[in-house]
Amino acid sequence: MALFAKRTHTCGQLRTADVGTVVTLNGWVDVRRDLGGVIFIDVRDRYGKTQVVFYPQHSVSAHAAAKQLRGEFVISVTGTVERRPDGTANPDLATGEIDLRAGELAILSEAEPPPFPVNDETEAGEELRLKYRFIDLRRPVLQRTLMFRHRMYQITHDYFDRRGFIEIETPVLMKSTPEGARDYLVPSRLHPGKFYALPQSPQTYKQILMVSGFDRYVQIVKCFRDEDLRADRQPEFTQIDVEMSFVTEEDVQEVAEGLMARFFHELKGIDIPLPLRRLTYRQAMEQYGSDKPDTRFGLTFTCVSDLVKESPFRVFADAVKQGGTVAGFVVPGAASFTRNQMDSLVDFTRGLGAGGLVYFKWTDTGLETAVEKFLGKERVEKIASAMGARQGDLVLLVADAWKKAYGILGTLRLEMAKRLNLIDENRNDLLWVTEFPMFEYSEEEKRFVAMHHPFTAPHPEDLGLLETDPGKARARAYDLVMNGNEIAGGSIRIHERTMQQRAFSLLGIGPDEAQVKFGFLLDAFRYGAPPHGGIAFGFDRMAMLLTGMKSIREVMAFPKTASAVSLMDDAPGSVDEKQLRELHIRIV
Image 1 (tube, rainbow, N blue to C red):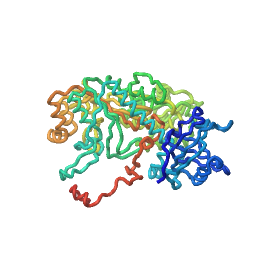
Image 2 (image 1 turned 90 degrees about the horizontal axis):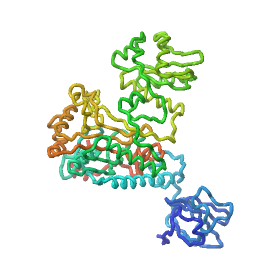
Image 3 (image 1 turned 120 degrees about the vertical axis):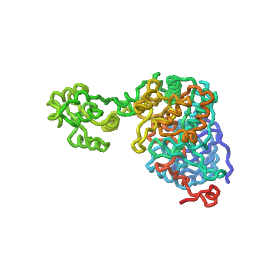
Image 4 (image 1 turned 90 degrees about the vertical axis):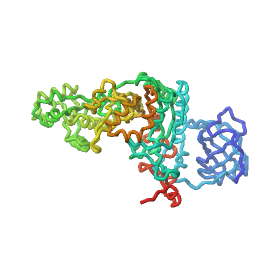
């Protein structure tokens, strides 16, 4: 093992003020260039790069050793800081005005050629990068991203500490209370046949903490959900978990907005205007077709049900009579779309489950639509006028059940924005979506399920609907949305035992099952529970959006693939028979 001198400076630290100083750098060889006698290398660490020059006349031994250097060798180099000759400074490098003239060189570790270059830009596929994640993490772009994430941690700790919150850790091994995604289960060796679950969220624990009198709790916590993955999901993820006693929705939202303001100010130099815009769930759906709308562009919707409910066009009239909706949006300047482009849009919409897509084009010769013979020219003109269409515009309309129609329009709206390049990637729009339905009906399970979770309090005005028409009852729930992504969600909680039992009953959870799954929470409510509410921020998703990455895998040190596999260490893996016997498990 080579002896080495400890570094005196990092590879991103030296400046012209250090000229004449003898220093030692430790790091990886980034680039090596042999210019016929004089050897240049860039030595790299997470702080930056410094160019080192090896002259044979200055140090024969260091120059000889430098001939052996290759990319990713780990070295220790000692030398004198010199100003670069006129005209040779590198303005793209923080250390670009100086060189280190090498006097001593120790090769601490040799390296095989890496499977892909350690550069910001790489053509390596994601699977290769994840397999060699230890190489991938050397890339400056990922190191910057993880340092950005580190700053988010520090801001979070400081922000909540200043606001009087207490950081409390909750258990990672807990009781399985499945409601939503599948739990990850952990078998107990000491209690054969019984299992712990990894927490999907510390929800019940933080409510217990409110009952215990800790009125302001926060935790940056790992959570686990066994669900199908996508670009913004991982089986294990991090959230900022917050709970407060004696609060209303506005109190929780004010705290959340303050954290976002600090993130934007300190990390991006942007001051976001507060308070943030608020839309109810119904407004979000009827304007944008999504409960997490991207408001960085227009294309908002107009309902025209009243204009077509008596029309002879049965597709529209029947949809309205059956309680559905006819709605759509105007695409400015898109009347020039070709027949092929329109056929593509119709096929896209049908692929979403729509029966079809009705469209008008307002060309130089007037409004053109294949359904004018059913609607009549006058009604077509009224529809176009009600939607604010002008000459040169394209009008798109869908008819279906309320939620389905707006959901289809929401996806179509995003597709049009992508095709027409309408999304300003440099813009950041944040807003609240409030007053979600408390329940939604699951056709698969043939019962109501909680839209958020079963501990969400109902809107006081809707208590009478819980038994008579639960699908119309609103919850005291709220989501924070950024650029079409939900980045935080929370609610005011149920804090009374009888109301919690009532909610469980509506979800098909009987008294005995409720006692088995949630008895500890119901018991806690017997002894004086304060009104309380909270919110949980998706830390990884926020980091992804704030850094401009397209996947949360880019802001996590060791992520899993879309099939929940860690390619680097081959997890999940097999275990031996002895371990299985100790856990009283047999694989069938």
